[in-house]
Length: 78
View 1 (cartoon, helix red, strand yellow):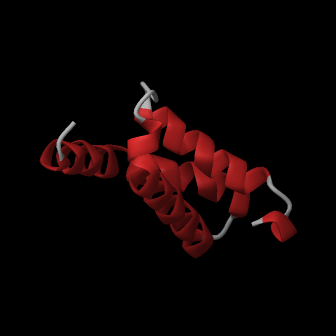
View 2 (cartoon, rainbow, N blue to C red):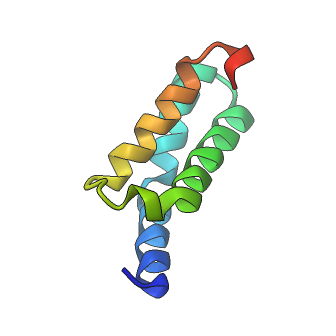
């Protein structure tokens, strides 16, 4: 996939799912800023690794799984 298509798809995911991801993270953290930071980090992780994750079919679900993993790791592992 070319760079423009990647950007368009990522922007669509960002606009469509970001608030939902933040609500999900907030349900664990009870802190809006922490939830927003965690979601931003998860989105950035996907973006920075998208070329090696080409086999991922459901990107929104993958990003949610990354967020969940960060939420459930002991703090010392982050």
